[in-house]
Amino acid sequence: MLDHAVANHQVPGGIALIMKDGEVAHFRAFGYANPLELEGMPEDAIFRICSQTKSLTSTAAMILWERGLIGLDDPVSNYIPDIGSMGVIEEVFEDSTCSIRPSQSIMTLRHLMTHQSGISYGEIGDPRFKLLYEKAGVVDLFTTDSLTAEENCIRIASTALIHDPGARWNYSLGLDVMVRVIEVVSGRPFDEFLKTEVLEPIGMQDTYFYLPDSLRNRLVPVWEPDSSATWVLHTHPQYQTDYPVDGAQTYFSGGAGLCSTPLDYAKFLQMYLNGGMHDGQRILRESTIDTIMANHEVHARESTWHQGLAFGVQKEEVDGSLEPGAFFWGGYFNTTYTADPDSKTIGILMKQTYGANEPTTQQFNDFVFSRSNGE
Image 1: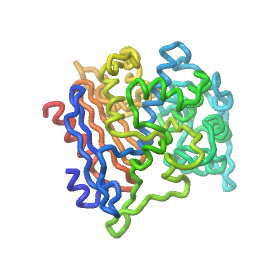
Image 2: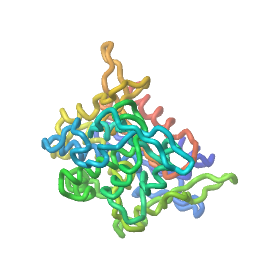
Image 3: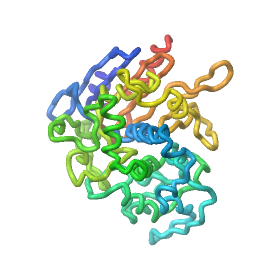
Image 4: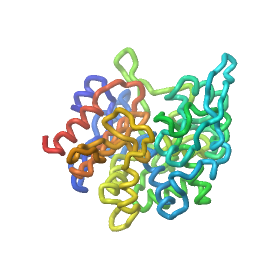
């Protein structure tokens, strides 16, 4: 299937990984890291995992929760006063100003981790917020500019919410704001906290916001298709794809900033399948994982999955009731994962493309998880 996708210009290349019962059942690099030079995809390739960062940020936050340092229903204003006092947008005018009404509810940390805060995305969200964020200088993906989480939160607070906190689900910058909460509570830069509390204990040696010199040559370029059935390097007016190796390297995006490998990310997911354990070391309590995977939606959506704390969780019918099943998410540059606690199976497919409307992610998940469930 993957070779067919390369041959038919659906993807330039990538890496597929399947874990079963804690062991690697399938691991293969396919296609090209550089399709123009016919440079094969190396097995140790590093990918921008973008929104797969969210679950790692949520894990870091839940370590603080286990220690009693934060509560899920704490007001965000306890930690970032300006964010907590944001109002709700009513109308955007031609001069890019807007009318704002007071919020009718209090934004909580749970809202930040479950896309219910009312904070939006700009680049991939409501076009009104793309305009507002550009004017305010809000970074909602990644940047090579000199910026900190604290400064970006100040910029976000100068804009508006798309809805009252808790009113509905809207994909958001909440995990980027959660980074600043973690910094305030821990008294440490987020990259340092994440490294010492999550990445190092799990053995994720190739996972970074900004790659050290020794790893830079392993970063796969981001490709996009062009009209002549070839691939060209992706460029974008709002960001640079070389952010992991260039620029000021001061912004640690909890929603989209990390780079990693399939093997590293599989260690993280396996820790969850192990009930919070990695190699004999406890990272999270098993009861904490139950909390993370629970349905945290204030107003239920019509969907086959519910929103956990940064994870999407499939709804599984057990004895007539819906229970948490496989958990999943993906990234902006075409990376994806699913982990199934019942079959103890992990499927990870990492590519680096933009604007490639192709079926391999769905095909991969259908293939792996229909078979892992005995179908």
